[in-house]
Length: 232
Image 1 (cartoon, rainbow, N blue to C red):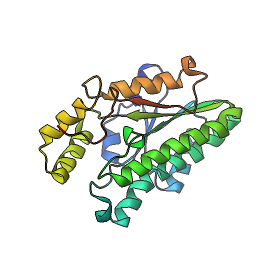
Image 2 (tube, rainbow, N blue to C red; image 1 turned 90 degrees about the horizontal axis):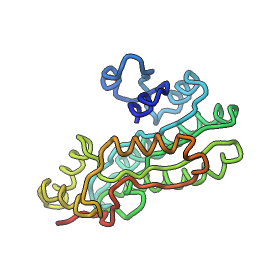
Image 3 (cartoon, rainbow, N blue to C red; image 1 turned 135 degrees about the horizontal axis):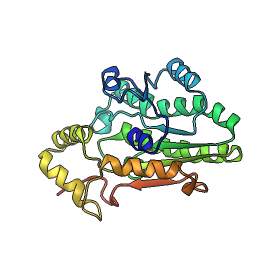
Image 4 (tube, rainbow, N blue to C red; image 1 turned 180 degrees about the vertical axis):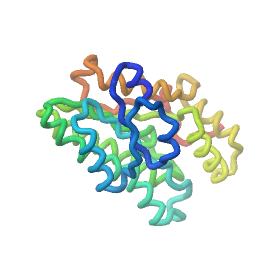
């Protein structure tokens, strides 16, 4: 997402809890080490940034892969604190400046796990459903101030994060990673995985003047997923 906006000429700010990852970003990007679950840190970042034209609240963690009775409250809370509460805090502290400016586009990252039931991933699914509820509420609250809010629901995105999810799910379901990966692909109408660039392109569109009357929407970038519990 950051690269896509930078390619379009935007001044980019990136925050992450992983300081080492920030060190690898282009030197002309603004990078800050922030834990989105810490309100003081989030408020400090937004104070430094000032007015934002576009906010992409994308931070999240996968949470445990387990049947509900085996999910600990600690793991449940950890997933909610980053994936849902972190999104809430990011919006809370970015919105006042957007209101003063009378404009803004908020783009939240949900998931296809926020559109279907997702067996063995209750904390993550609950958080991502919560992000959708937050999106629609923000759209209603902020529309009178010229601020739009939309959510993107990525499907299975190629890359190391999803490979880790597949490894854990395969172990929990007694499947091979290869079979599970094939099941994800077979569960889409386009028979394909998603690239990070596909998700970024949607974010750029939602931030653009071409989407000036698009708000409160939940848009999947997933190759059309119909099978949230992939099996072969």
